[in-house]
Image (cartoon, rainbow, N blue to C red; front, side, top):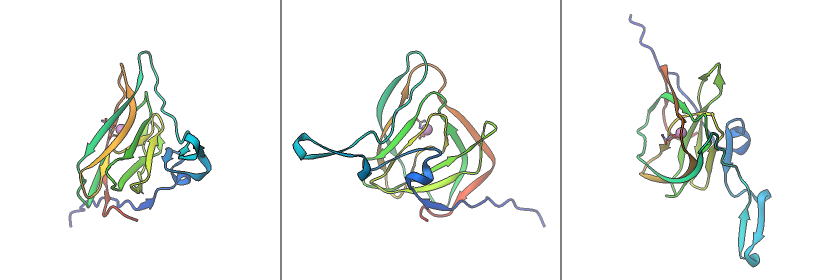
Length: 171
Ligand SMILES: NC(=O)N[C@@H](O)C(=O)O
Ligand code: NI
């Protein structure tokens, strides 16, 4: 009987600041960060994360990414990272999305960890953190993306010999 390689299945966990902390920050209205401003008419959730850009001529840019929804079951065949800058994704369309990140293992991504981000949660990947490109769920979704523009190669990709599988986009 031929040994048919079966893709290892990845579970999905809820996105929390603690669980995500090795990889970056969760961008959400954390009450502990709140300051009342504008005469008490506005709540400022202050300094939830920081944009980090490196290298001569680098600048922080704000973008909109319009993501097509991923089909499920979904194969995670690769991961990428940005050695010269952080990258954040904040939903603009009211839809949840999936976040997949990996620890670095001797310059390669380890087993991905997958998180379900609610529509009120964004993430900021710390510089050089392995992550999968944007995974929108269920509908075309817009995201505010804050990341780096400038000279130099800011994209490193690694394709797995054996893809991983996300059966469905929820815990
Ligand atoms: N390539 C690009 O700008 N997008 C990726 O970095 C991503 O993380 O979606
Ligand atoms: Ni990226």
